Length: 225
Image 1: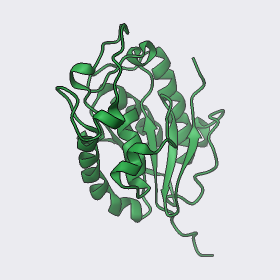
Image 2 (image 1 turned 60 degrees about the vertical axis):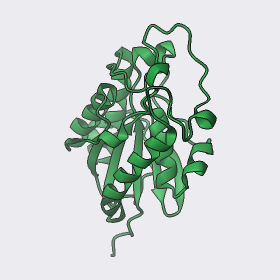
Image 3 (image 1 turned 120 degrees about the horizontal axis):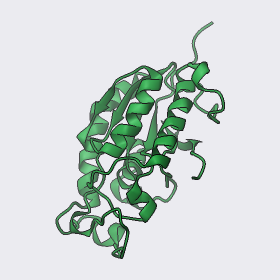
């Protein structure tokens, strides 16, 4: 019997929770570690992805969707991570469970909010109109969304041959950068990717993005708390 055809796809993961997320801070490039909840989220996600890699003993109770059937045609081949600590910690848990190394990709780092970033103590949160005022104009001391898009295009170009060959790749990143990357993977142009409201990942969540046909499917979201 012939093997089913590969369907190109990527698993997009948002890092687990940090104290900054809990406080509603705007972190950007601030390098905070996971908090206790975030560590549990990363551990749960690792169990779920280990199930996809065929490690059933680690998968009991994971709540993992069966929606990955056929994508990649085999186990997870690589875990790529933003260089920020919260992403690296999340990626390390997943990679250890799936038996693959973590590859650090600077392009996956979050939007740099510059002087608008706030610390983990919370406090007053500035009102940012990122999608309108900072689509092309950088935030003071930081980046624009288009700056992030251009670096993600570099990553996409580098990884696309592996994805098209059927290798299942996990990309661990951040809210804003992942939103743009989801649009890029689905073939949207920059403005359409910015305007799309179909992908709003919770901390520690995993989504499967298939390329043909383009679609985004929620695979696992950690329980609250």
